[in-house]
Image 1 (cartoon, rainbow, N blue to C red):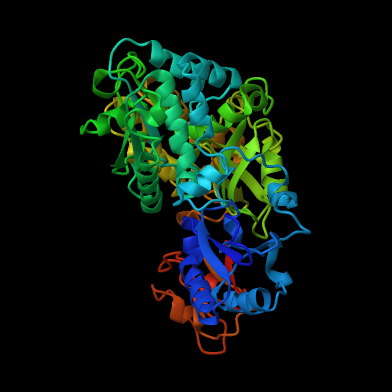
Image 2: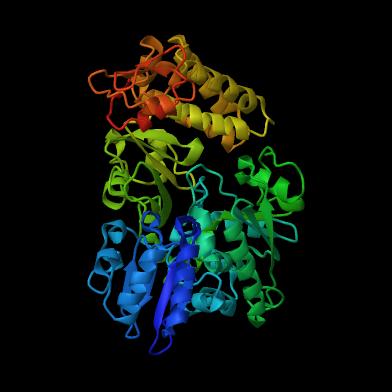
Length: 596
């Protein structure tokens, strides 16, 4: 955060989507009201997500002498006490502190193994104030490359750094820029792909909410390198806060001379427009995104020609995602060798992951390539967030794979994940514990990709539908052993014959769960049993008469009227009437209802 004026306290409140969902609005109002009422020498500011979504609402207090105190899980009531004891009396409320001058943020287990490049400013600047970004070195890289005036040198720097596209494909960024620069035709276009659609993923959203100027600066640098005169941000309309802050960043950058005609007197001109996507997952694919930008239905086309040669309006077009572009200013400032020194031989730099699911410390993490899955899950994430052991992780979004605990020592790099049957994807990482049914997980993700298929090619449109039907039969206890061979055969054909990456990777959750959790499929088919007790058609509820006290709570909760019994006597569940909603289990205070 910005240092407060001399003699003042600085109060900064986490105001990303996660903070707002946790109640940041009310906390912000409380601080402002009380500070105004008490006439305290303090300034209240907002910032983006620092990554610790599991501790929101986060509030940082910086004392007049520069000492920082970070509070977690702040509520309006807690805010009142923090104001009274810390701001008024000068005594920090120790039991609510996450970090202070004695326990530095970077020393916490959640941050100790992280390396912040993309997220370097998130949680430390007001994303709606360009001055904050400039104060932390923002637009220094742009000034340097415009002063030097050599686009080829910029491309060589990015190529030497080893930066690969973070949208999922992992294509070398410098190579993509070179292909676009060398392509014939004008004008040339640059597009930032912020159409993040993976379930459980929120990397791009958090970066745009917390540090939009770093992405914009990276985009302007990239446009200079390839010779583009026009650019577009393609952002999901479901990200209203990101859209709002990005629009403000575009306006501020234009007023400061970083956008528009003759940027900083260099002779280079570049304008940027923002388009909100309509929520089609397939528009994350480059050629479908271009179709959407042109006002057409978002459907992929055959490649070649690649967008670098024939993209938007048939002109050379370069597309990078949010995370890729946010890395560029850091690389220009720090040097290609510093970036290349991070990571592995073939996967350089850092990767941002959205850590979600059954995890103790969920949130946004940025780690050096080469770190293992186990280090992310256990050391950073703190292991299981439930009483049950972790069974697997789903990595790479709906097109990724499910990997078991036995593969948690797999390093995070493109090649290692691909060998395991998963993919890096854009960075979603969903943790699954023993309560998760892997057959149902595969069904869920396949249902998502099948629903999001644009329908253009037969194998994706029909093949995923037939695969989904098989999975639904299995979860309903109606499957046959030969279904497993059939679904594998279908998966192979869908992967080979689909037109774009959506169809080519859609079978991954099915194939990896079949590979690593085949026993669960066989239990559903042979034994008509769901080991995780998740598939409704394969479970039944029964009341343990030795535990039931006849309180009647389950009777009142049951929407189907399946439970009967006299007061203060053991009750019974009629399995023929029971809809298996589970409300009785949630309601019973005596653990008298068992799932079989």
